[in-house]
Length: 159
Image (tube, rainbow, N blue to C red; front, side):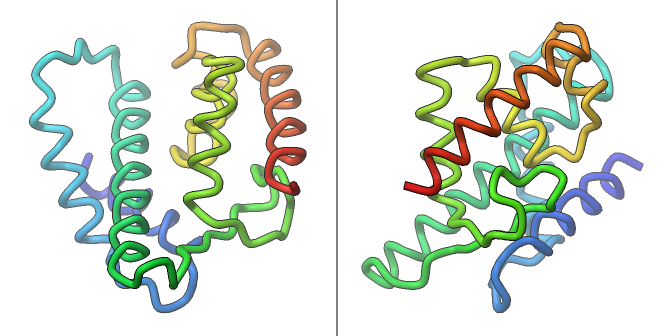
């Protein structure tokens, strides 16, 4: 059951990737699963926490894959993703996965909770209520953070 849900999450991620992406959903979910079951120091807080960690692992795997591919081509072949309109800071715009990753890292320097919310929103497929629960804040606070983070990301990514 867990594998099936993780596989669905991996398929959603890879649908956003540029055509011709070499990583397959099964490979992504298998690697993520191996890393998840190897987590010894995590005090699992439930289903939402497990899938949030799984989403973060898949995100890192995609970033690592993109970096390796870019490195192999010595700067060419940017890994591009198209975010769903309901979560994209620049709706309908194709973004570079590394640029999004760098933007989230910069946002974390300003506001760690907003950066975490963006990671969960972009990459986990969790609802805003589930994200609020994972962050330990109210849904209203999470929605306000999302509004601010999305505006910041739009500014950062459009420069």
